[in-house]
Image (tube, rainbow, N blue to C red; front, side, top):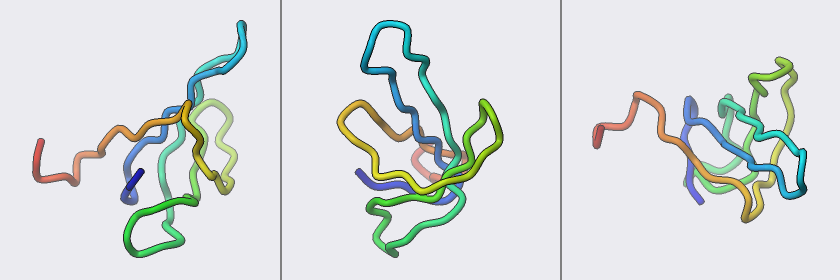
Length: 67
């Protein structure tokens, strides 16, 4: 998984009733875009560090030229 600042990390719930969470990448720890990522969660505004698992994927932000 690779991400850039401005991308969204979408984490799907793994149990029945778990909500999907979406966070915006605000900072990278590695220049190559590999995890972990600092994200701001859209549902509650909190920021934190995430090591995304298999239930997560990246949605590219508007900065990508391939759009």
